[in-house]
Amino acid sequence: MKLAPRTYRQTVQWGFFLFILYLGFQLWRFAVSYGLNGALPETSRPPYPDGAEGFLPIGALTSLKYWLVAGHVHSAHPAAMFIFIGAIAVSVIFKKSFCGWICPIGLISDWLRRPWRRLFKRELSLPPWLDYPLRSLKYIILLFFFWAIVMNMDKAALQGFLDGDYWKVADIKMLLFFTNISALALDVIITLAILSLLLKGFWCRYLCPYGALLGLLSLASPFGIRRDKDRCTGCRKCARECPASLPVDRKERVISPECTSCQSCISACPEDAISYRALRNFTISGPWLAAGILGVFLGVYVLALATGHWHSGVSQADLRRLIPVAGSLEHP
Ligand code: SF4
Ligand code: SF4
Image: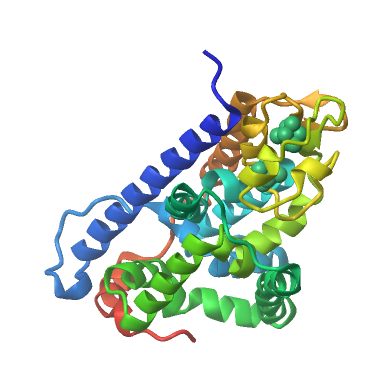
């Protein structure tokens, strides 16, 4: 039985989503064993789930710059940086596929758009005069981080941040964001969820600076969506399915920082007119794309592990001192 190309993507997305939930649970157990939220510290504790550091992209960018200017990897949360490098690598090779295949927000956005589609059989979209300026927001946020970290932090400032108490427990702070969520954060999340119900991929399309960066870098990808105009009947099913609202039915080749290689347009096309190709004729099918994305991500993980840059070097003494008070630590 031949599976639709997007089925491979959904399988990988679900696999990562469940794995991320597991990492979050493990991080919570780990933090509680150090006295988080007033718990009594325990003597035996679960291993630290380094993969949870994937939720620290801003610190990861700081670590990456530190590596480039200092010539060595900082020992606190190096996995954050390697996951960031993995996200860049898969997105440069396989066209922003981190957003479409790995990031849990992509999966949640997909869920959120379904009820509306089922109910009303069509989706809302903003008029171009509003859509284009709003799309630039994520690039403005990205520019801010680029200016603050890449342009303005010298080696001493980078080291000061990475050596500091805040970064040592930034993973726990992120955990607390979800487990001890503030009323304001909850309001923001509910607002974003409602907006994502109404407008597909609201967060990814308008606000996510991580996606903005990966999208810009993905323009260097040799892969992309191509439409065979001789087979195309103009039914527009591909464009209607595209979560990025790209006019796939009007392009012979989709060149856009918004395309996430999600394969939805390929699966939707009844004429087999769309393919995922590199350099004109090298077509890659769903299972091979899935294997490629997992292979690149796994390769970066193995590289980090083999070079001794995966496990966090935050000391036991620091964890004992900082985790119980993580909630009150302020950004430096
Ligand atoms: S063009 Fe196709 S692969 Fe790209 S985002 Fe749209 S549906 Fe997904
Ligand atoms: S779904 Fe296929 S046939 Fe229909 S417009 Fe898109 S490319 Fe053409």
